[in-house]
Length: 588
Image (cartoon, rainbow, N blue to C red; front, side, top):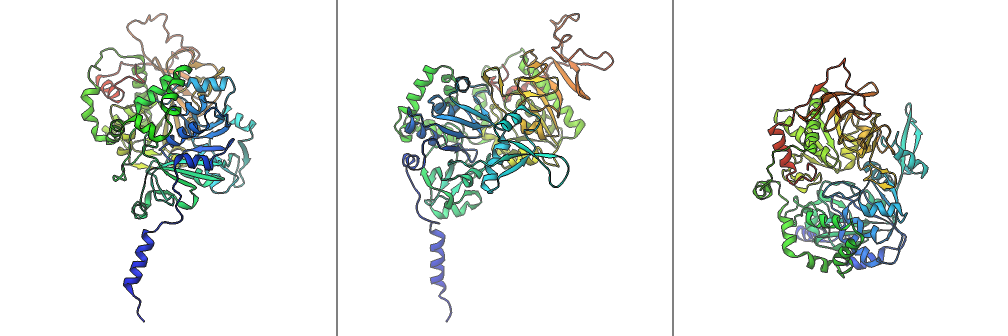
């Protein structure tokens, strides 16, 4: 008997349109009440988008109750001051603990929490934290890493029994290893999910979804929109989280606010950019406990729910953030943004950025680097200018960003390294492992790392962890870059507190640092010592007794070598630099 094709087709279509399990839809409040317990280890992440609505709801539910959470996330940025200030977090595990916007800097809330031992800060690097989650997801006790060796950061983790070296069983030498990290609960924000929890996440994937598979008990997913199963199938290539690992899925529009949520690949929903005004207000409030109390009362504890938070935010503001996602919109904003920005004088920061850009270009030419990875701040501006000008001349060199971006062309008017609109100009979007693990430290890498630091010493070691009892910003990806890149260039302001004989804490080892650039000198490594190769003299310098002739600890220019004088930035260099940072976040 021949099969009934119509009947089989109906059954087939029914399966396509069906969910892949029971409904896991929940309100955000119920999900947190049901799945989170006091003293849990909570991981916030899993993509470029951050689950900030869930973070703020957690704060509402536990405010004033001392739950002693362990909070893990790649970057404790501006918004995480809320649970730290509220003393909800006994321990923070991260690679960055800092004010990230408008510029990377120590955050007063984190500094005070560390100084008073209110929160224990456990420092990692971007890649090693991701490796710990990957190990747990793969059900492995540990994974090897190139990072952490030769640093106080690694030594400190050894004392915590969180890092060690083992003999390479397949060759000579030892290799560092990091243990698996199993959060009790992982919280992720995605773009869309069906009722069962199959979740779409747009790239770049940053720390990726390893923490979802590593969670010991529960996974809470928040999304911009809950959609039908056929919608998920249409974008199956973006489904990073399968339903069977999800405990609760919550529809939370603007659930990543105040940070961005990539969404351009799914135009039916779309994404939104970072709310710089909001992040800036929070950074300012964090400088004064009373101001921060008022801010939290206004936006968090005084808003009974996320819906109330959105009402306060306003539809117009939310829509404005959605409209700014296209990179090609920048010319429309330029006239307003650049109004009155013209200036004749060249700042020290501008000199430093251009001097560094010139050295980056020189090293690209001499060593044939094909990729450049820079950290937050002035180092990224220098790299952007250098690579942009090299590409104009036909050089095959691309920019990398540790969060998973390869080959972007930086969008003018916005110097923020994680500028949403840079995603649209990228050649590929991946994750931390692809960029930091393979492109930067892999066996075929030809990457020039460009870093900055609070301190650098005569061995090239970098400190971004702490000075005295002041908690600095943390490693981020700097240790990964310093440990794995083919070569490293460091740029810092010319100041005795920045150029020191020995850094107080070695966050990143200096063995791969070849060039140091300040706003006054360029120093290059000869064997194991740095010597001055170029100097800048202003018209006010006294040739007989100048800052350049007594440059802290690096010695004077060698009279037997050719020491060049650096010219002021050209109009073309300055125009490009200022176009990237018209408000002077890093240049003033």
